[in-house]
Length: 184
Image 1: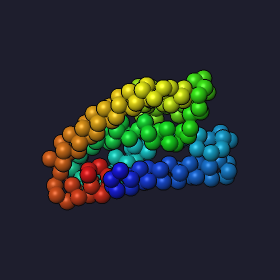
Image 2: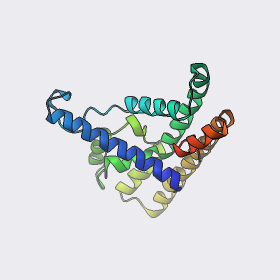
Image 3: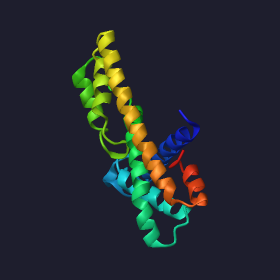
Image 4: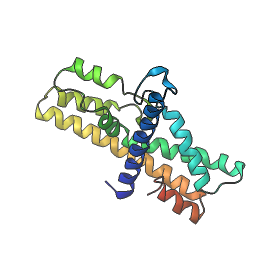
């Protein structure tokens, strides 16, 4: 995994943990959440909005017309990054789905679907099911090959989105976008 991808993932994880801590502190002090404790109020859309505001500010856009032209390209990169990294990161934060028991695996995975990490791909689900069911070696290898092919396609889509964004940025904005993890 490339260093900037790892830094991006670490940044996202840090933001998640900090926001959960903030919500927890609010709940302990009687603020928000209706008495719920922990990170139950995490809103992926709000976090994405904050990220877009940061990109807007960090890239130095003062003209809303220019930002409105670039923002969809930034969104495409963000979405492609989520898709390319989502199923693995989603599984990491949801934890082990349980071994061997399909009902247990589905019950554990259901609560964490969607949101910030996106939907797990059918290829990832098929691979996880093969692992959980302790499938024969050939079946696991076939599921792994399909998963890897889908990941390569998602990575190609990410590279294309990054190149499209790069074309409309100034060199200074490109450098800043690289530091933000949008470009490689």
